[in-house]
Length: 281
Ligand SMILES: *Cc1c(COP(=O)(O)O)cnc(C)c1O
Image: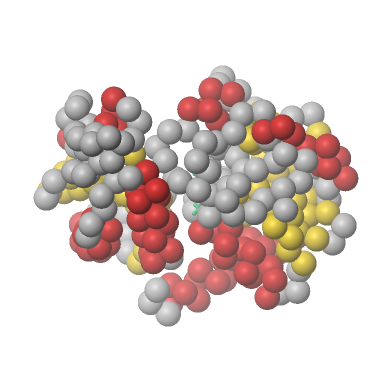
C-alpha cells in the first residue's frame, strides 16, 4: 500500500490532498526528488536531499529547515510503509509553493512525501533496450527538478513504442523526460554537462564509477547527427539504474542491441549501491 505524509500525519495516499489554492496546482510552483529504499534503507539520501533543497532555493521557495524535517519523515515513513520487507520503496518528496506568492517568492511552502512500491523497468526491457523519441523541445530551468514535465510529456503523447522523449533543442542532445542520457562512441563515454541538464544522482555516480574503472568520460553534449556513429547509448535514473537505449527516432544505435559498456556500468552501479547500503549510507 502506498502511504503519504502531509501536515503532521501519515495516511493512505488516496486520502492525501492539497488545498486547491496551493501554487503547485494553480501555477506549477513545486519541486521534488525521488529516491529508492532497499530493505528500509534510503539510498543516496544526502545527495537527493541536497538536490531537493537546491531546487527549492532556485525557485525562490523559503525552505528553512524543511529538508531536515523531510529526512526525519523519510526515516519514520520507511518504518511504517509496508514495502521494505525485502523490497524496495520509491520515496517521492515534494515541496510546493504553498498559498502565498510574494512577488515571485514563496514564503510559506508545503511539503508532502509519498512512499510507494518501486517499479523499476522489467528484465525484458534491460534485455532488449528501449527506444527514445527526439524532440526539439527543451526543459526550462534544467538544473531544477520541477514538477512540470509538460514539454516532454506532450511530445511523446500516445507513443506506446517509446520509453521517453529525448530533449534535443537545436539538435543538441541534453537529457530525457526524467533520465540522464549517455553515449559510448570511439572508446569514450559522452554525456551533457551539468548546467545544461539536471545533476542526476545516478548520473554523477555512474560518471565517477566509469572513470574509476578506466573509462574516458567527456561531459559534452553530442548532436543528434552524431548518433549514427554511436556504439551504445543508455539512460540513467533512480528507478532505471542504467538502462540500454537501442533506438532514437529512426536512428538505430550500434547493432540495435544493448551493449557491453551499459551492462558493465549497470553491474558496477548495483555493486556500488550494495556496498553503500551495507555501509549504512
Ligand atoms: C529525476 C531526473 C533525472 C534523473 O535523476 P536521478 O537522480 O538519477 O534519479 C534526470 N533528468 C531529469 C529531467 C529528471 O527529472
